[in-house]
View 1 (cartoon, helix red, strand yellow):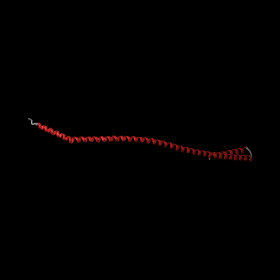
View 2: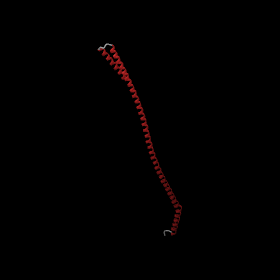
View 3: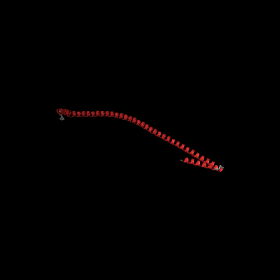
View 4: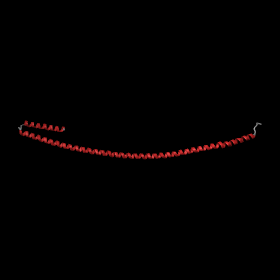
Length: 168
């Protein structure tokens, strides 16, 4: 017939089964074990990554809390500094106002004293002029021309004294 021998086919099948079993023991189990180990390794890496992410989130929240606390503390210190600055500025302004009031008061007193001196001086000069005019009137003849001349002289001297006092 065709030259097919059943025993040969069975022997080839037996060789194939033995080859398959040998390869199964030699190759499949180590490959499956390698894949299992690899899967376990990546699962461990994933677990580490998840733990690191959780730790990172926790630290980030802690840092955010610390930053909020620090910002609150900074705001409190800023307000305290502003209050202290305002108080210092107010005390400087009050001290300056007191000094200004003292200077103004001293200037007013000095001006009042100067005014009193000027009035006293003016009264003295007016008295002297009146006395001099009276002496001239009494010592000389009392004619109208002489009276007008004395009166004009009195007015001229009074105006000169007033101009001199206002110029000082």
